[in-house]
Length: 295
Image 1 (cartoon, helix red, strand yellow):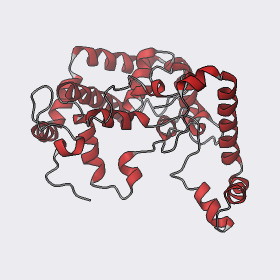
Image 2 (cartoon, helix red, strand yellow; image 1 turned 90 degrees about the horizontal axis):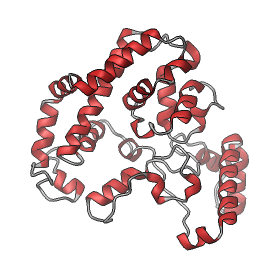
Image 3 (tube, one colour; image 1 turned 180 degrees about the vertical axis):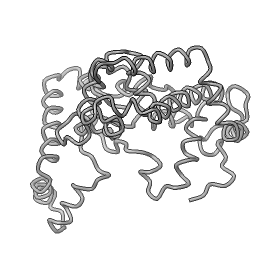
């Protein structure tokens, strides 16, 4: 798919001029043309330079991955460079996920619904190779450059909101073959109740959430049984192998942890569908989910 003459005003449902007075189409063109220079300049900013220097020094002096990840600057750089900057607040979970290994089917990186964890664990391979991957100069440079690029993108968004998303969309849409490739792995179905009901019935809410977690775990552990249960309870007219293929679809994940909902909330706020933009994903869900690694 090729995007020609992309109008950010149409894409985001926003006026032709951004809040800062910058034409978003012109801003996108300038960002694309000056991306390499912009990232290089960002890497020289004092704050970014300090983070990068501290990161390189910590990698060089670390005894093992666990000790390395105890360094908050290292964890921030690694998460940001791997597209997990929004998860930096979950330090214990992030450390456990990155150390768990992508090849372990029962490891935390595989258990979490957000595929970014598995990707990051596979890239760093702490479980299989210790610090060897990080100490490869090429890998280290790639991570440092990615950190500087994301920092540069944040500065673009500060001047022209949504510009970083537009850059990502532009790069992704050209080679996308499915909707998921553009929108990402996001939660599509949610169960909801009124705040009054949730506040008045904490026991029922907790029991329901536990049942959801159990059901999702059973689907992952025994897809064939899950497919049979689906056919029996829904009275769906489909062959068992069709139901099993649906359950095993690699693009489908069953989890009670919301994933990717902030992208939709940000878009809806940008186009005026909602007046208040949530500060974080957990604001939209029951408090019991707040400690999970959602997005």
